[in-house]
Image 1 (cartoon, rainbow, N blue to C red):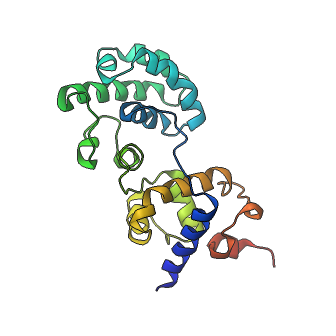
Image 2 (image 1 turned 45 degrees about the vertical axis):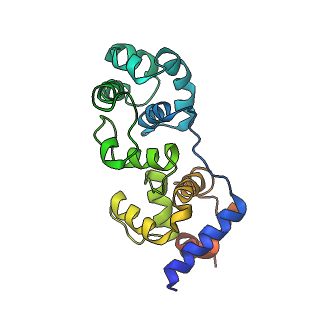
Length: 215
């Protein structure tokens, strides 16, 4: 077993014991609602998205209703979200594409998901992992930063490189859960500016901690 794989094993064992249930903090009831929420969550907090989506979903409970709206109307519901103009356009385009090309049903494969406006590889992977319970590793800013900081990836230059490395080393059975472990660890413990190393249970395998700990 390689040294890097041992690091992954320690990571998995720790989080399986201390965070056996790890799920998205976005609030949704079906794949359509999750897709809308994930599109809105780009460069925005889940908390803000969850404050915004109830009224949005009440007005547009399905893709057909949203497809018949206007950008301005969608904007009026999401104006407190970051980049509301672009996201309103993407939501309308997404809904119209779902209705026209997929019968109003959110596709359950990576290729078709990425045909929807506003849906890149990360969002498509989130849908695969969360909505369809398939092994996938969406890489957002938290995952990219935390994986590199701990040393699960080494000097990854982009999210795709990070994704491939994580997929290669995490057991398939926990891959999607590991995505949530990394996000939640980055959100509440391994903060970008000032990580709470004193509250971290994986300092023994963390490159950042070993480099910066006080002697």
